[in-house]
Length: 377
Image (tube, rainbow, N blue to C red; front, top):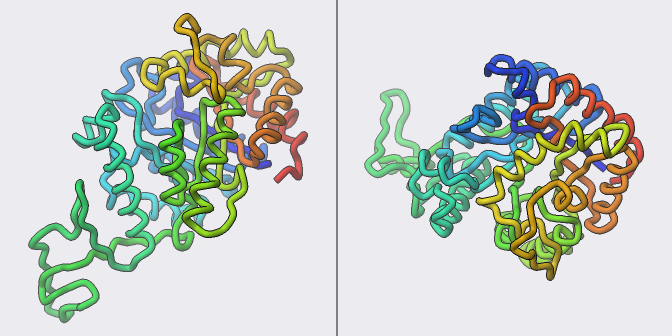
């Protein structure tokens, strides 16, 4: 199996009170993750955090800094929230990062979940406007891929049209080029640089519903799950495999091109893990509860009673990798056996936990858990 680290920079908020300190912590965490053998460091994207924690507005820019301080670990975004980006700038910035890293980039796309974030960037980015948000997401991703796979490109869509109407260009030293001009009128754009990885870096999508799983498969994006328990992930992995098999004309195996992300904390015992990490882990899940809904945590055929609380006792057996090394190994073995999982992202840094404990968490997972899966996948 492959193991990667994930963070939204929410961790260590109690001791790191400035952006400079949070970035310094992230640098140290990434350097340690590389030394411990993690496949990648994945960064989330969030804006306008009202509680001054978890904001990571530009994972691409931070990725450039982390790449300069490392040599092997891959640098990923899970995810760039596509509706919040201008597609040309997104394509350009990621391509620059891919060249800066010599091809160590993984690219994740998401639709966004917070109603107070999306509308600040584009009127159709509001996740409450579901149809418009989905259309904007799909169009943005398709434009980015068009840019990366064609020397010149043009696009006419609901939200964007390129080149803009009445775009003209002339230069006394260069005659009009029919590859991208009709006289002086520009008919296609050339966006540079091209990515280092050809035709482009691996592309991912964060998914949490059947519809988003189908979208990822239709677009040929790898899929990453967060909340669902193993049986629900298995069901959605089967859906993903069916859609890609039908579209691409070759059999896709369950688990192929798919990953799972889990909140993780390893300690000598479950009691100590819970004592250290419960508040920090639960702050993220409780914060998401009104927006994502509780159905994302259910098994197939399960209907939750209204009295069910989204608390530790409910989430721990379903969606968390916490406890002793043996406890965590058991949970990963379940994901491997049920879902045929071969790529796991672990969220290791949680709000309020000091940096030293976050680093110890990474180290314990790498030395006590990862070796149990050596050679698996």
